[in-house]
Image (tube, rainbow, N blue to C red; front, side, top):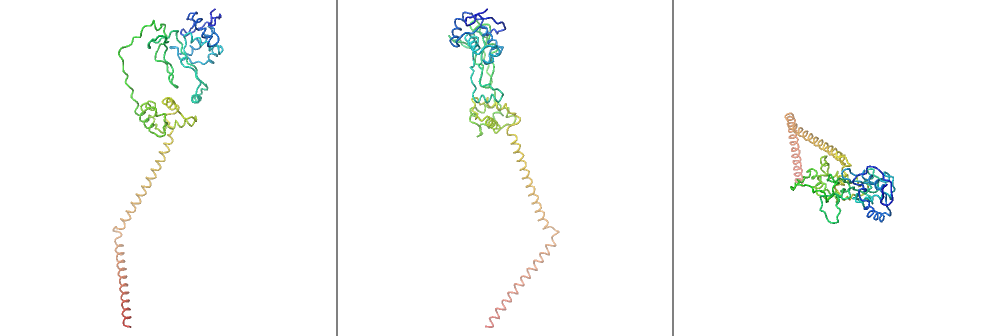
Length: 367
């Protein structure tokens, strides 16, 4: 028989409960003196030790084995795994927090409209985010911070950003020693300076051209080309341009009916690029059609130029044939005929003048 946090006797339930989340390690007087009054004040009642252990076991099974972090189960999931009621699960989690063996590092909340639309596209129909808990010994171990009076030393927030979930760089955050009894970590006095990584040149060129495009949204200019270089390095290798980047943003806006206004533009564009096949850019077909039209127009211009060249060559050949040796006799006959015609015309003019002069003389003599 064991004593519950509510003061009543309960049947002890056997089972492997993680050491870091076992509230039975604490003195029973602590639970009765501090936890029980606070639990009754906040939740309106107590909870049995059996329920606390069942909830702690369910949360520990969902957490990271090495650190105890990342336990993100909803109340409904814990109810299904333990068979307890909703109020019992809530009181048990509150008891674990008051005992100092669990910390709610990320409060659950409802998703915004944009987050729900993004979740539904990947098949997630949930309307909220579950709370994130970290399980640890009653005295957390964190040797990287300065100890202040009245301050509870905890590890940093394990969640960074909306789309990035990375575990802490510390390999071990739970040990058998406390902050006061553990030895200080041996660290080298020599500091190493990391060389700044150079941006990808092709990604930087693509980012610079994209930011200069008038159709690029304003939120993209929150970062410089250097800040966009790492994200746009892979599309640049496949020959993407500013028109392709604006096309995927326009397609997403058309599909969702929501104008994008991301708080983290780099993460948003990386997510959009992950949804597309980089080898097949959005404007690839348009570019292929334009290339075909340009090639057809160039062929027409080449054919017209060849036709003009052939006409010019034919005219030059005809002119050369007119002055050639084969046409010399014909030219002589034509010259003789032209001379004879000119003589006949001159004789006719002289005869006409003589006739006029004779007529004038006759008219004078008759007077």
